[in-house]
Image (cartoon, rainbow over all chains, first blue to last red; front, side):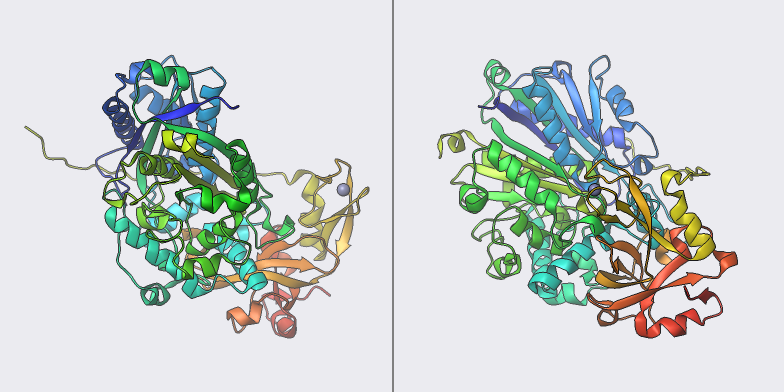
Length: 414
Length: 166
Ligand SMILES: [Zn+2]
């Protein structure tokens, strides 16, 4: 039996295109304060002084215009003379940070750990176009292999799209229309999330008519880069009891895997193997079944940086057999009122992608669903008491992390 | 009483120059630059051909030996990029994808150029051939060459700024 570790506080700032009134460490402060307030609302009586350690999720030094940004946050948060460790695993930074915060508490080296993600990308600025995005993408492009792939124009979109195209070559899906449905769903779900950057009521046609970015991804198939911070407070079972926390959400599974960062080295280019290995590891730890997972969980917050990649993830996380992801979204399965809602908060396409904060936000959102505290986008029924959060990132989506959460009711269910 | 917020933004830049060594992979870039040759490596134990080359087989932990690869191959998967990083935006639209050189075990990411750049022209299964920059333009970098559909090879190889691989 694994150690019982709970999320006892959740703090998420709004995801916005640009905060002119906050630096990255000020955003981190906001999320930490919100997480402490949330823990206290649930019965704990703690301040930042009670937090014993921090695990920071921050992807990109070039966004923050600062190497080792974590130490500057550590100072601003009043966390001096306590351990703080930074995780940086591309788009999967958030999920990996939750995993390492879990490990820190489970190992016993910290009883009360702050798991904090932040990113502020839109200070990058392209003088040529007078816009931020091309320079943000420049800062990200250095994540590709600098020798063999970056010089050829390998970027996040061109890397992810090749995997989706390879999947299409093998299975005949996801079609452009099936991918567009993900965009319709996630922009739509974001309409009920006041913290989301891109709430939109749109149609498949709107997505199909949006400008081409990277064939066949169109503008509305892609998430926007966002500025935000998200924080979780993790505690072990004894601390949960001691603090008399109501409504703890237990982390019952953490799985992660790095697949080959060179897509050309993979046996099958149309698979995100990192997803498969991370999911299987997390499910095994949580005593869940890869082949029946859809019947064992209430919802999943997936990493939908690109619409087509969400469709493939349905298959890799075991929700549907390989090749059937496209059919599943057509059937309405992952919609908010469907068989097993995916990205009820709007995901990255609806909320925006504040890289280091994203996976921590999605873990927090899944936990809020299990607590019944998700607000306007709360699912009508939480029956199984379990949810998934999923993070993926890096060159060719090489990094993946999957987190399984369970509420008190869920712990009693087979 | 709350004070009205007024923002202040500054211009700044982070820039580093390099003289980067290609280490054990140097031969690949020298052969590319000087002789328009594409070298992979072959594991002495399992026989796997690594392309891009590796000095050691990551599976067997044994040395891998240099092998010259053909200039022809097959597109495994591709895309056409229409928007992107400031560094590449001047080149859009451009084709790129993974090419399995004949005899290789894995695929190489490269630019795929075409006179008629549409998805069907550079899709999976299409045969491609390498075209190189002129010798005085080659720097021993991946940008020294690119691939074109086999039926466009003569056209590209005869352009004044490029040459065929012989
Ligand atoms: Zn070998």
